[in-house]
Image (spheres, rainbow, N blue to C red):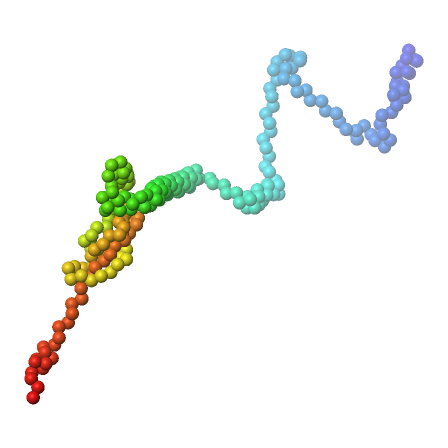
Length: 241
């Protein structure tokens, strides 16, 4: 028993002294073991989960630093925080109205340009057909418009009429600088105002737009000649002494 007890008491020599020189038992770190099992192994009851401790107040120094950092970042990045939903809704509504108005104006411009492009294309086609109409007019003046040629000419005139194209320029029309191009001038006592006396080429218009002016000869009213003074006539009739 003595050897046995001696051996048991000498275990420190067997495993060695784990304490460092100069350290006592009080200076060694404490090992804390927490039992986190939900069920108590001894009683079998469910343990209550301890609630989290309430958060302590944030130190003034730390809170101030966080606030300053957030405010500084917001000022640098230009982030604006809106707390009023009604104000933000009103701003978004105004933006939507503005975009809708701009889109409506754009649609009107597109529709107007589409109509204008169509009219210009029709006018260009009519201008290409006007020399053909001039040849038809010359054939009509010489009584050469007959048969199939006359039928084709009538069909072409109907196409221009349906397109809203009208011919103008007849003998006896008052001269209008906006409709007629005067290439000949003469005087006539039979007219009281400048009048078209010759039509070399008819003009055409589409609505209020003149596609081509009529080429005409114009007669102006004759200038009356001044009669000789009566005193001179009497003096000439007196016999000389």
